[in-house]
Image 1 (cartoon, rainbow, N blue to C red):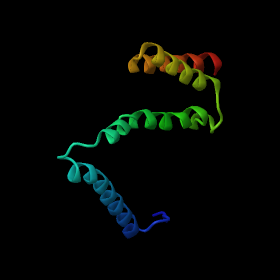
Image 2: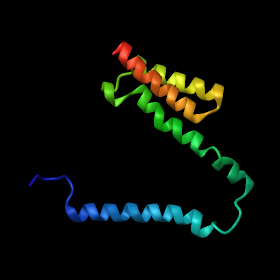
Image 3: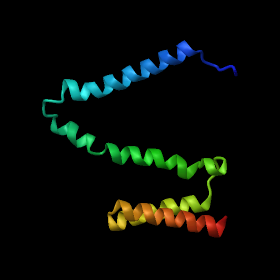
Image 4: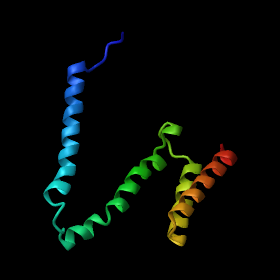
Length: 112
């Protein structure tokens, strides 16, 4: 059996604390304000949550991809640019995803 950096009781304490924190975050919206209408200013800001989160998830994978050891490479940069451009032009998520994927595979095939 291998030694680990965290003991079994500590692991379960961390898991329980994360579960409780996750529950409380969800309950704050659903339990406390779930039956009341939210103010217009808050709804306006919540509408942009996905727009802010998705680039934050994707940008590190384009700029510092794990597949290349954290160095930028042209096929992934081109794929991100094509996906962004097609998404802006056609306003269609599926077109952006498939065009970016096709560009990535074609770029990896041609440029290595």
